[in-house]
Length: 330
Image (tube, rainbow, N blue to C red; front, top):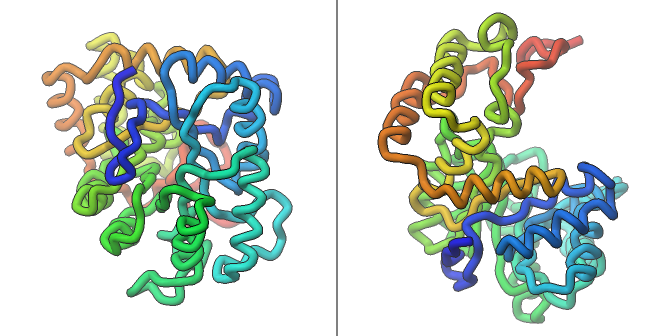
């Protein structure tokens, strides 16, 4: 696998990295993670990303990496672990206990990259003392952990755009993970988060290039269904479906190859549930960047609707019978 430098960390990472959030939710549960992790390492993956609040993902990944017994860069995130009922993002002692738990789950003495999870959504996790300076106990803790040798690099990982870009501009973090805003039809991260990160030589993780399910397959509801779907989005998706039919490239493969061509990206996260999905993603990357003509056609399709309509959810509900739009209450 080709490699890139992860910003100012200086780490050399594969173009594809393993997103471990769904590994234990796939085939075989906890122990089923080992074949996926082992095969990923064989294929040249050398970075795996997880989080304290991804169920048993940390513990599963730590066990699988220990069994595989091959070097791998590990990235995780601060957040409430499973069963944690009173999470206090500004309680530095509590945050340190979560870091200790992550070290235990991952079976490591040092964590390569520790990110602040969802720092860009005020009200979800209020990490900071104010939204201007973005200073808070978590910033001090990460610096202390670095000085103590318990973590090597720091980062932020979120699903927003504007606040995440402002957080990048503090210059305090080494990497950023941007999700759900960096796919062929949703590109806000390309004009906000990634440029901010590049200004500070931050490593950039691009996550969910298939837009959390929107672009994993062609949905029949696009032609006739999902009444909340904006007419412009309906036309745009149909144009995308026509494109993949015309060029003979499967939609998830198209998304991965597009993501590899995004300027300023260090690595693209892929979250396979089994070895077959992992190998499909690897094969897609081995095909290289999309042809220029395909990229131009994708750019034209994107311009049909460059901003998210009001009634559109972040996750894909095209095949859901109980989603009627964001204002619907039952």
